[in-house]
Image 1 (cartoon, rainbow over the protein chains, first blue to last red):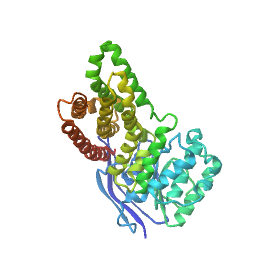
Image 2: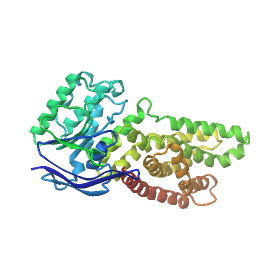
Image 3: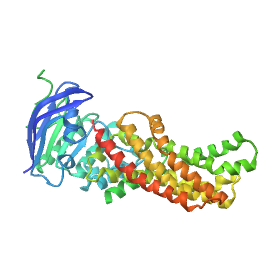
Amino acid sequence: MLRLEAHDLACVRGGREVFSGLGFAVAAGEALVVTGRNGAGKSSLLRTIAGLVRMAAGSLNLTGGDPELTPAEQAHYLGHQDALKPSLTVEENLAFWVQYLGGGAPGALSAVGLDAVAKLPAGYLSAGQRRRLSIARLIAIQRPIWLLDEPTSALDRDAQEQFAGLMGRHLAGGGMIVAATHGPIGLQQAKELRLGDTP
Amino acid sequence: MSALTAIFMRDLRLAVRVGGGAGIGVLFFLIVVVLAPFAIGPDLALLARIGPAILWLGALLASLLTLDRLIAADAEDGSLDLILTGRTPLELAVAAKALAHWLTTGLPLAIATPLFGLLMNLDMQASFAVALTLLAGTPALTFLGLLGAALAVTLRRGGLLLTVLILPLTVPVLIFGVAASNAAVTGSVPFAMPFTILCALTLASLVIGTFAAAASLRHGME
């Protein structure tokens, strides 16, 4: 069974220690919600797991996954930016990432209610629609670990509920979620990790 | 392999769509070549003599013009983060990007050269010789520029840094490119010698540019 464990993790950015001595464990089907004030290191933690920031100390182990791949290669990082090209259509944007990152679950666009604008250049999408397209990518690529950085920003209430359903389905399918957030994102029974309380 | 095809096709598509800037390099090249006779004066013999050098300088500046967007565009919209978490080796991914960039900016420069050679009073044979050297030499400019583009993203500085970093590295390419062109025009020295060195420089920069750019991007993860 998939299990992600972090021991004594530390992160240094721009010469400043963002956090240190951090430990947590998430198993398949579990969600970890990372909270804390601005600048406490929520995004840095997600980027560290995604392999986008070098660990200053500590270890990050994934057991039960594909032994050929690093934890970062089995994770899907959904950051503040949507990684969309405005001159490509919605379909083309999604197709590119599916081809590049692998996966390819069908029906991702209709799951987020974007099939009506599939032929539209992504430059014409609203902020909420861009976010939905990122969520469609999350579903299409099917990596077991979802790293979500404030995933529900710009989403309307309906879309938030829809996204909560999609997250529930991902967890039920044996995936895991690490999410950084300020407000509730609709995850029941999620473990919480508070950053920045210890001086 | 399909991941590389995907990134290659995406970059080709982006370059030819609105705002992609595929035609900008050729336009800039044209402007440099048109300006040269105005600056030098109506001395046809002089123009023909320095023609290959002007064409090479124009192509060099034109190919640097669009290089700063090569990786910066992906870094700004978050695509680079996802590219880094891909299962494809980063070296191959950036090489695919650079190849797509060369096809949309470097190759058109070489294709336009026989036409632009007329403006420098070069005869057909000389123009095609310059075009051939550009065909062999512009990949070197693109892959050296790839290194600069990666460094500019890593160091979070804009396009000017790239130009300042990369221009000194292009000096050997310029020397042997112009030397090969002149050899073809004057016939005083064999064409093959400088041309083979130019090809060797291109092959070396394919490898150095690719690996150095990927190393720079990995090192810059912060």
